[in-house]
Amino acid sequence: MRVQRNATGALLNMTHSDENRHQLVHAGAIPVLVSLLNSPDTDVQYYCTTALSNIAVDAANRKKLAQTEPKLVQSLVALMESRSLKVQCQAALALRNLASDEKYQLEIVKADGLTPLLRLLHSSYLPLILSAAACVRNVSIHPANESPIIDSGFLQPLIELLSFDENEEVQCHAISTLRNLAASSERNKTAIVEAGAVERIKQLVLTAPLVVQSEMTACVAVLALSDDLKPQLLEMGICEVLIPLTNSPSVEVQGNSAAALGNLSSKAAEDYAPFNAVWNQPDGGLHTYLVRFLGSPDQTFQHIAVWTIVQLLEAEDETLTNNIRSSPILLSLIKQLAAAGPGSQDGSPRHGSISDEDDGGSTGESGASEIAALARRILDLTDGGSVTEGLANGRSGKKIAPLYPLKCQVDEC
Image 1 (tube, rainbow, N blue to C red):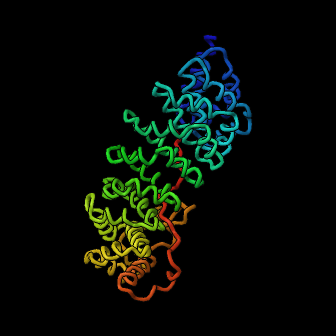
Image 2 (cartoon, rainbow, N blue to C red):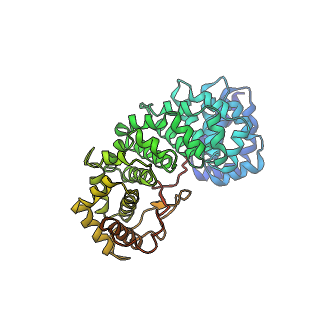
């Protein structure tokens, strides 16, 4: 047993570089390490599990594992129930890296991996919480896993972990998982809101670290894609925290906060009073945010702002319309954008601004010409003129997505 420990420990030490991992796999280390997962010795289990976790960082190695080791996931799920905390932790980390691939995301759920992961989330031992949260985050990427995760009881533990301020990585994994779970289903969006996620985000987001703020605002932007939930989100006062964050030091936080506001503005409700209530406050309110984004050199930020104003005007709320009409600086910036043509903007598009609900990809055609068309639409609506051609049929029907894909994962060695 001592020889096995030393040998597996040596193999583990060799897995910390890409070239070594390639050579180990080529030399046949994978079946040896997998077979020793069932060792009665916890040190051997630990060394093998950690080595396999490192090997699984590489996509080519994950493919080989999938082809040659059909019982790997079952063995790792079983090790999450080990009497050794360090083995439990490394088993979850190995599953996290495997879950970078779709096949393993599904297989972990099929092997009943959610049960031990939920237990680990309730642990008082930080490494266990961290490894389980990272694993669930990757497993939640697959749309077919969203409902099983919610139905298994993960929402409350994940929401509780949003307050885990002693470790921002745990907070990020928790909020990113909630965002993943909300991506594909109206039912799941509703379940997340009803579980109290938005109230918790509202309590925490203004004082959270920037990286956590970015994930939280992205989550709100995804939830705000739901027409049914918009009145509820507005009633919660979510705009009161989103508006200050549009002036964050982080470009991602700015953009995601604005995306959330834009999504909320589209078919928000019969009553647009929540937008009127924040027109001038907090931090200059909706008005100052729109002025800042309209004057931004970033084409994506301009696009979000003009699109949001169109949504607000098309709501035909008298107070909102008067607020926009009575702002000389707002109208001046709109006129400048309306007069601009393709190629006249200084900023270049960033990935993922205005898109259809199921598209978090690049802007593509949404450039200076579309910004100019939306700006002219605003002038038509504020001056009572004719509707700009191509935008005559009511609302544009588009929604603003977060500034990166709706789904997110984590890979680490």
